[in-house]
Image (cartoon, rainbow, N blue to C red; front, side, top):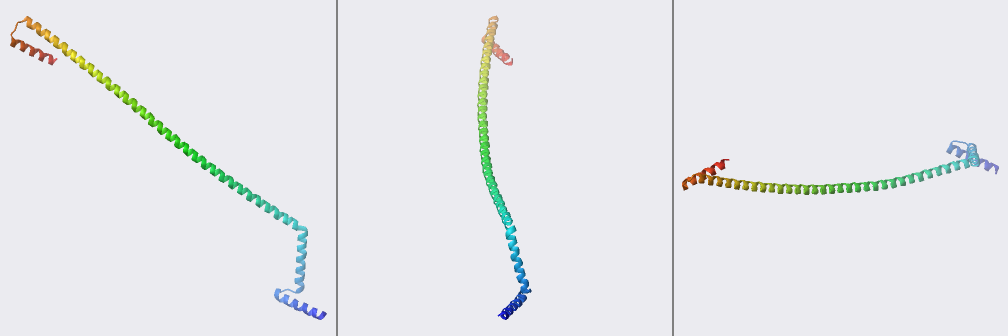
Length: 179
């Protein structure tokens, strides 16, 4: 049986040597070294490695949460800014509309004042025309009276016949028209 075991070991060694290019002893030593290394890492470093990985995971979670919160704040700020912009736009539109309305009201007031002043000036001019007209009529009447008086005095001074009287009237009218 020892012989069979030896042959099997030799056969496995040849197969491993052909497949891996190493002897069975080398493979066993390598597997043993790897197991020792795994056990050393597990007992001495595994806690530190898992703590490091856990801390890194927590840090990444915090950064993700922080980024999410910052994004939410940015969206809220954007919404607030958009709302303020709309409010400012509406206020500016209201201000422009009220200014336009005030300008129109002031224009209407100025037009009404101008029309009233024009009407007053027209009435005043009409009154002045009437006064001038009455004054001219009065002057004409005075002139006619003076002319009639002068003619009457001339007639009395000189007794003239009817044709002389008509010639004298025509002369007086012509002389008064020249003046």
